[in-house]
Image (tube, rainbow, N blue to C red; front, top):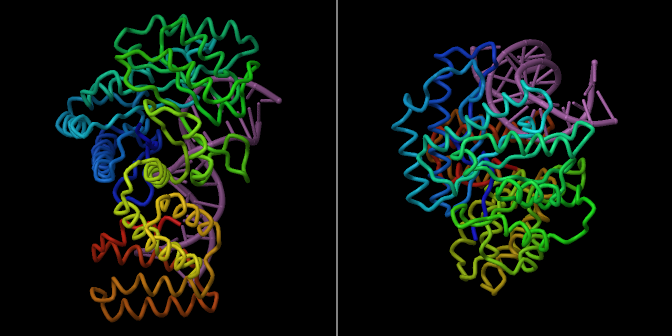
Amino acid sequence: MSVGYACLPVGVPGTGLRSCMLKNASEAKLAELIALNLEALEHTIDYNIINEISLFRIGSNLIPFGSSPVNTLPWEEMFAPQLHRIGRKIQNSGMRVSMHPGHYTALSSPRAEVIAGAIEDLHYHNRLLDSLKLGRVHKIVLHIGGTYGDKRKAMDRFIGHCERLDDAMKHRLVLENDERSYSIGDVLEIGFILNLPVVFDTLHHAINPGNNRNNDVYWINQCRKTWCAGDGKQKIHYSQQDPLKQPGSHSATIRIGEFMNFYKNLEREDVDIMLEVKDKNLSAIKCRNCISLAEDTGALELEWRKYRYAILERSAADYQEIQRLLHRKSEDAAISFYRIIEVSLQRPAGMESFVDAAHHVWESLKESASVREKERFLKRIQDYRQGKTTLRAIKNFLYRMAVKYRQSSLLDSYYFVF
DNA sequence: TGACGTCAAGATCCG
DNA sequence: CGGATCTTGACGTCA
């Protein structure tokens, strides 16, 4: 079982994807952006390999306007060396990647121009995975689209358009239930007709369960029947509702208690779980550490080094509690560890604890920093105490210092994420 | 016609 | 001038 995350890791410098507005999308601009984005993707893949994250979704915006007629660049050839290098890293590390066109790619539409655009978009996604020289276990996840007042007719249109796609494309396609129109029952019906695998999305299902009320495990086992040997492991999407936002909004982090219940009920290891969550890679590592059978306290120590300042700035008591927990080396330390982290990160940073944490962070910068920079730091702290500057401004300052003096342990930490 | 979701670009404001 | 903060864009569907 692999647990993965989508598109952009948080707290990893140099992994952001660039874009531009349509009116600025010249050939030169697009070529520059593609080069930058491939560098960013390679950094992300490197990060995944180092952190043993073996499931990842490549963002559709990797090639700006990739499926639009404004982008006529032969980018597969132009960037072949970078693309092949990235593909080899994915392949050699045993990573599995996917792509996911959004809700705007609708093969069920009654409008011919929308269908043409959707097919263009699918071709773009397929071209990208082909250009990385990746096989058919690296999937493209597709929604069905709208219902246009008649779901049966829309399903028939979807099936018709899908059947006409070429085989190479069809071998990559997998279908997903959505939170509005197509329940998992609907999508399975289509999947069986088209002989395409189905991805079960837990949160979409919770919001749009359809008529046939069954639990997650039942549907996951139904979906399993749609996955053939050549498709690789069955994939599912797992996410949790943000309690303060609209139904369907992904939570800030995966609440580990809920996830572990889900995992235990699943009683299966031959499933890949793609998380959809705001804190991305952080939750992927969290879930991985909590389900891994080996009592690898090393991984937990590494995590603590990354979380510690974010916790310290909220609560010295939480900080000490975690220190004691890790010292005890108990059997289910990982779950207890993340439970405390989750509660602690909900607290706002208090003024004194924030200043305390900022000083600790400064400790690793002060040897490199100039006298002027030290003065600037102390002035900012003073201003913060007097309400003349914000916590975020001080963190941004510390971040720039960490970049300038290449303090990788600080840059790799989650201090700047929260 | 605007909400929906997403997130960087672009625009504007501030010191 | 640099940095922080607000607004716009790009996609299709649905109310």
